[in-house]
Length: 377
Image (cartoon, rainbow, N blue to C red; front, top):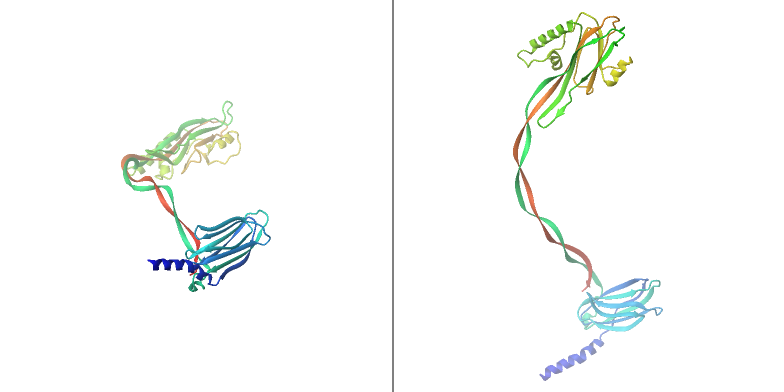
């Protein structure tokens, strides 16, 4: 027991003495210019047991706001404020570590020039050549942020009744637009003029879920005198012969529109009539005896024509009798052909798949790289 206490006592007394005999090794001898409102930082590595000797002074004796020595990371070994000089401050390194020397100039206008000396006395001969330079490695800090997210739990299959319309049938139908006999007076008539216009409203296209109606084409026929009725009947018989056993019965103008017939008969006796087809503006000019550009026109004992599409919703048929003494009776017929399509409503179940979501708070990592100093050895 006495031997143990003797050895402990000897170690306590002679270790500092032996270290004092080790040479002082220079680590740094620097002059730093520290600008206003800034700082300078130095990093050096030290071996376990090193005695660190630190000295600094400001060239003009001006104070630094703060001087600090930190055993990295975060262990402050020395700190002083408002100091202009520090002579031979000694710190013992308890372990191999990087030391951070921080110099802060809080002045707003003036910089500081500082002289700095850092030396070390190693604990043993083996540590004399210890490399005090540091190297930098990348370390990663992981933090977590909590964010609300929609999380998929599963899927629900839903069945909804849906109405759909399916084509049923289509057919072409005739629409009587105009069918009239009109007297047009002579050119010398005192009570009535020898010009007249008639308005013919063509069928509009109609659209609905159950039914659509679209104009296919339209046609007109004009006949003068008593013979017009007989000639029209002949046209009916002619179309009937062509249509028998092929398609449903059409009127003569319906046959002309569909192409069943290419020609229609017109009267060949009696007086002539001038006729033209135009729009509302043209009809107004015609009645004022001004020049117009008609859609169609002719002069004779009758006439006819067909069109695939309507130039406008309304068409005007204008007549002029140039006979000075004789009034004439004119038969006017206008037929439109429309295609009618019918649809039938059907109800069916429509399947849909809907995601089922739930809002949950999920932790998401945030990885931040940073550079840290380590000893070279």
